[in-house]
Image 1: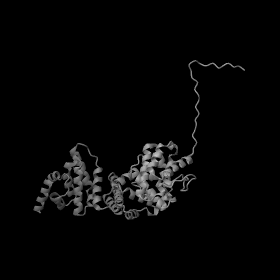
Image 2 (image 1 turned 60 degrees about the horizontal axis):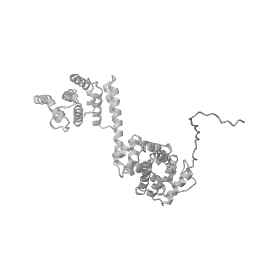
Image 3 (image 1 turned 45 degrees about the vertical axis):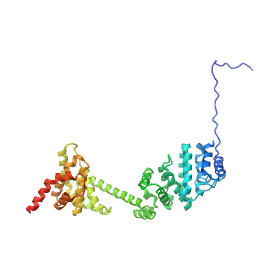
Image 4 (image 1 turned 180 degrees about the horizontal axis):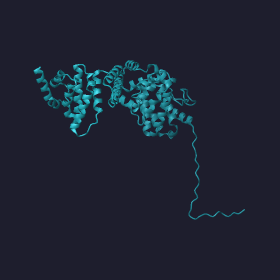
Length: 411
């Protein structure tokens, strides 16, 4: 056997191949270590935070295990509230009192940990999702604690926690059907409003993308506006009831406006359109004043404005008013509604500079179509209360008003 060494190239280094050495997966030991830190410091969160920050435990791998210990005192079996074997610590969120004062320190503690280890926000999100998906397995008091914690988490603006991913898991059929979710979000909203305004709550619901889905948190048999109003009124959330009613109302008006837009683009019978429109407004319980404003806006939206050509704009607007004026007239059957129409036209012309000179022409056209009465026009001219562009519009209408007064004297 030859003992000669193998030839090598001078000046080269032989690289040793590194092995991929994987650390053993041992979440149980990690959970025991965290629980022991809690026990050693008797639940003092300041001291616990210092030890956690100084430790060399693998939080990137066992972040979810860490938050399980913070919430429940130890590891929990997936899909249940039963504990896994191992060390348990009694100073957890679910062992605290169901009050803001007792739970807020845990939120601040988690906030401090995440500031040092931002990557753990995803682990917190995953654990919160699992706990909320298991709400039905917890008692009413524990659900209240979770609601308080969730509200405080967003109230304290825990960096990076997406409300959409937290609240969306609550729309689980089994949770919704039993009313579990409805009670949870009610407690959560009330707690959030302790230190935040109602506008802040609406902003949170928008970020969570549930602002328009609140009715989905009600069991199917109670998914009505009446049940919505009754439930949240009893819970002291009357502003939420009023806000939702306005949202529903705005949706109805938008649907009406879209319906009219479709009708204006077709060759429809005026009488049939009037009847259909009145029926829709009755079913939607829309007040006549809102209908008058909506019909006017829909009429103007249907015009293809010609830009800077003022005379052409006047002609287009007048043609639209004369064509569809009877539709407006079917809803202006009182002096008060006629005045509401004038205010609507006044505001509309004021908000678009190119339409400022249109106002007197439109008023005259509506008078000729018997939509506006002489008395209403004179009342607006002398005592109208809408200040938007009033001086300009009054001056523009002077010749027509003078003509009306002279005609009245002759009569």
